[in-house]
Image 1 (spheres, one colour):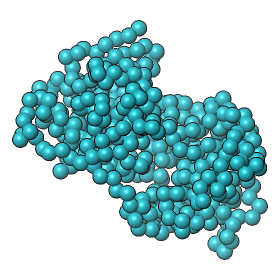
Image 2: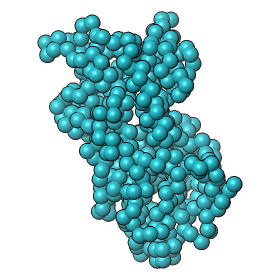
Image 3: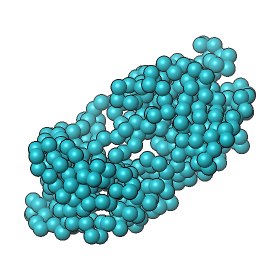
Image 4: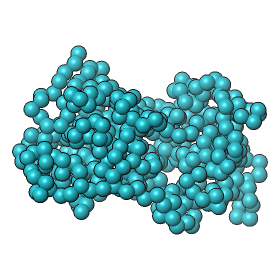
Length: 420
């Protein structure tokens, strides 16, 4: 059964209910809609497959136990964050976009209840993020699916003796560090490595170093910290195949023992295999003409509009081609998208160019910026090109993996002031 929303409503549709989508919704509700004539004619609509938002960077630690973080802060209800706004100005749709007709400006949604709904949009924001190869690292489906994956993983963790992680980026390194410390403990101050760890943990990376976004000397320090929690790193080696093929990636094979074939002809046996190699943009519902060769939304690097999709269409976050996937890039993009939505809505409502603000332009900060906790007390990283000491990485991120920052973001308090 298919339903259509009333065409008289000017829907500002936001696809995705995580950092980017929730932030833009708050920004528009606070700073754009109140400036429009006939404000009651506009409605912000978030469409999300998950009814809860969660602090995705915390997954490498959260997957070990619910005791690692207060669950009421790790997961929050999306609709509840928008109860503060006037009735009718916001709507939450629990479902997944299955098609966007950018010529007719329509979104088709498969609702959680099984029905289909079609919404006409006045403005569209694509913020659907990206899926990880392992279901342990984010809301690839919804919060229930993620929590079920964690329960199954934890049940196998107690008996696992060999864990192999494919991928030397932050997700792989952070997970190795958390599991290493949790299962093996940490070597003493004078020891360079942990001798005879209880569980063998191996990180395999195709790169010459782990953490390729950071300088080699920082990556080397990270490798030394991993050794102290019993983690071995195999570099310049690619995973050629896994048997069974979906081990660690498919929910039915999440905790299946696996043989990992490497491109040097050797192989590794694992009781648990965790693929942590890259992400896939969630764009299957979009026309190919709107996408780059890597599957991201082809986004104007300055205005963050999707020029090929027609007026008032924008993209940001991991799904967008505008910047390297990273939370700090998302937070920098939100005021740009918000300001340009406000400008475009005012122009569409009949205001002249002289009555609206000029376009706000985005410029990615490409300086070396990344923080990677390794266990509960160590970490490596850099910020805006400056190398950070371990204690600072711990203080900023390692204590709770950014959970201290998300309350203001989910509630909209972070966007209380309009960016000029």
